[in-house]
Image 1: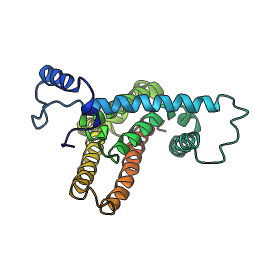
Image 2: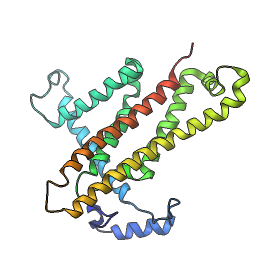
Image 3: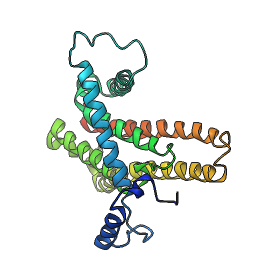
Image 4: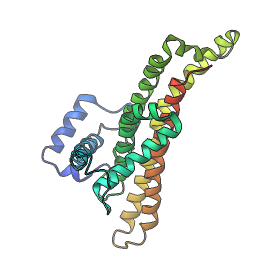
Length: 252
């Protein structure tokens, strides 16, 4: 498939949707390229798939007495439970049990969406939505605002004291440094994830194009791609958790 296209390009009305998007928004402000909708279609498809999976797994554990024992084999339920348990365990180690339970919906949703979005890039004919800056920046901004909202909720107005540094005479110097640091957080979260997934997807696509019928050639890149999928999910979620833990911490 041409670069920038996927199986969703074959949908009826795709050309019309793309034309409407490009006519409404014009060239993007990054590199002045044309507006694309592939990341939106992939993201919506992933939302539907995960929603269906969530409902199926919820039905299997609705009876808590019968769901105490896990399945004796690998299944959709064991996959989701293992994934959620890993995220929760990491949050407990970093935030404690009470905060981990509270922030699990936020960080867990990011983990599920990023992991499976990244994994889209390993399937021929699909693109990872996380290779688009619009997608990653949207998630990073959610983390950015959540960090400060819960920081104020936990510490009150005193939350903003840490922007001024430990000593009042240093406040004029520390304030701009802290502001720049906090503004850079969503930018680095978004760009890091986008750049890594774009590079991984492009490299894999190039090798699949060069050797489409010689399967062993891309296998090492698939293995590397699996590592990138996991690592980039962990990096985004761990950094997000660190930012939240710093915001809700009580300084003594």
